[in-house]
Image 1 (cartoon, rainbow, N blue to C red):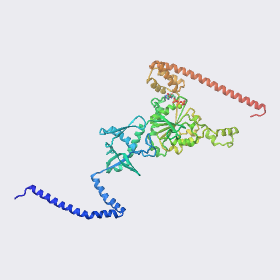
Image 2: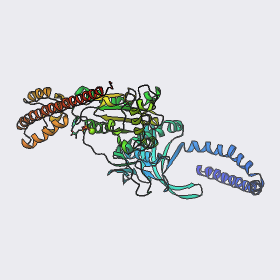
Image 3: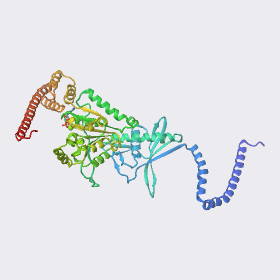
Image 4: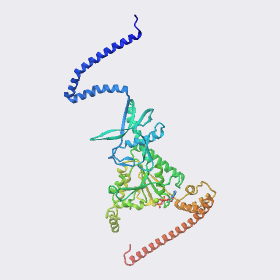
Length: 528
Ligand SMILES: Nc1ncnc2c1ncn2[C@@H]1O[C@H](COP(=O)(O)OP(=O)(O)OP(=O)(O)O)[C@@H](O)[C@H]1O
Ligand SMILES: [Mg+2]
């Protein structure tokens, strides 16, 4: 009788099971013999030998097998521990900032991706903003140079030294073959972008050096600060358009040329000297620069700095991406010929008189001991190159009074004259205050400004008065402004004439006194 087709299969199955059964039975008996042997080796064989064998042989094979099944690798970036102190950019100075940077990077990615639905939001450490991050288990995909990568947030056990604890990790998953790309290029890219995001999200600060103590540590702080929220921009800064553009281009070139500075061996910093009469916008320019570059400002009050060492300490404690400004540098220190006097010791120079020497000793006991060379080191010394991306600005009303060494090109790279209000500067002010670009009365204002030297601060004040009196309407406002400018011009002319007359009278009186003293000496028989 013919056997049914299904019968063959069943028989084959039975045969297979009986053989498999015997195979398992055989393996079982083999294992019975081998198991005590393996455990004996594991117990008594030298541990190092066993481990080496395992690492070299078994693990490699296991890993190869695993790579076929799961070709993905992961990198974990762990959240900083509770013992880490934070600054507004994340963990302070020497602590690892990678987690904060990666989190900031993913915050942007998560906000842009529709698939990322489970997000967390927490208040930014600095300012009113929020930092959005991915919730545990939520994936965020990313692409870098055509390679796909995935981020997720996980909580797991972390062991550090003796301590164990649960920590949050940002886990990056990628294909094994992109390992080099990820480590060499992608992760540094993540850090760089994250740092930039943290930087742009921060509130900017205006620092000043003070002698105050920290409220928590009770230590002397070098700098104290307030939030910097100055409204001035280059758009509202009244000055010659071409000059303004030149300055903005220079700032752009500075900001973008990190590699150029490195290649040429120059520290990444730039000095600007702003000089001009009062009210021409020197301080306003510093604010515009800071807003343009998105930098913090360190306003150095030199008169409260006691020594060169203190000055250096201040410098060290500034951060990069900042403007260090010393206002009215001519008033802050006696820098006029200071160096010449320091070089010329009493009695050395043939021309030095006793009176000069007395003056020297008197000046040798200054209230503070910050010297010109200390200041030069501050701007140009080795320490000044640390940190990079810094701008130094000096402002002065009397550029001719400064030691040439202080403002030579290379130290103060760009000398910017802030001058009296010209027509182009007026146009900017008119736009700021009256919101007009053109008007038929502009011609009259232009003629007045050609005739008389008025600082932008004066013109701005006239505009404020005119705006109030003219209820903001352009024509009456400009008419009032013209009257006001004429009045100011007359006042200024009168004041200048008076000052000139006073100076002349003073010079005459001095000359007369000298002539009289000379005559008296002659009468005594001591001709000079
Ligand atoms: N160029 C300008 N553009 C716009 N506003 C200006 C300009 N110059 C002066 N002002 C206005 O005048 C005020 C005083 O200007 P600022 O303090 O910048 O002058 P300064 O040159 O620093 O004077 P000082 O030499 O006395 O320190 C500013 O608050 C601003 O409103
Ligand atoms: Mg000023």
